[in-house]
Length: 143
Image (cartoon, rainbow, N blue to C red):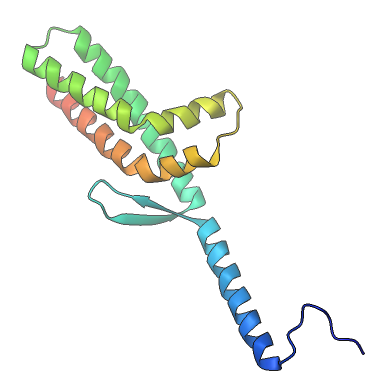
C-alpha cells in the first residue's frame, strides 16, 4: 500500500500536524464568529457577529436621531456658546461616525462594502457611540 504524499513519515508528526491544524481552524472559526471592538475608554468588547450588527444599527439610528435633533436646535435661538458647543459636538460625531455612515449608504444602495471599511467600523464604532452620546446629552440640556 502506497503512503499518501501529504502524510508525514512519522506518526508523531501526524499528531503535531493535526493539532496545529485543529488549533488554527478553531482560531479562525472563533475569529469569524466574533467581533472585538474598541470602546471609547480604550477597553475592548467582544460580541457575536449578530450582536455587533445590532449594536452598529443601534448606534447608527441614535446618531441619525441626534443629528436631526441638533439640526432643529441649531435653527433655534441659542446663545453663542451653546451654539458653538453643539455644532462642535455634532461635527465630531459626524467625523467619528464617517465609516458607519458610509457602510450604511452602501447597504442602502445595495453595494458591497470592502473589507477595509468593515475593519474601520470595528475600530471606530466605540468612538462613534461616545460622540453620539455627547450630542444626545447636549441636545437634552438645550431643549
